[in-house]
Image (cartoon, rainbow, N blue to C red; front, side, top):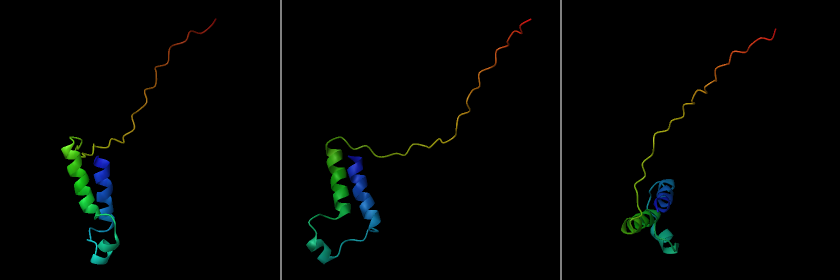
Length: 77
């Protein structure tokens, strides 16, 4: 359910958080994105499905490949 809230939050950010004017609200058949995000979050919390998003640290360091040690070979006589 975090994805649903996140999607509406992104829509709010894209519209720079500006509330819709009266005519836009009148012609729209959906509530504002911020209201929809809050509703989605409340519904997820009520259902016990909401987990706050916490970004894990990014580790982009390449690990050095271990080169196997060469075995000594015997020379033929």
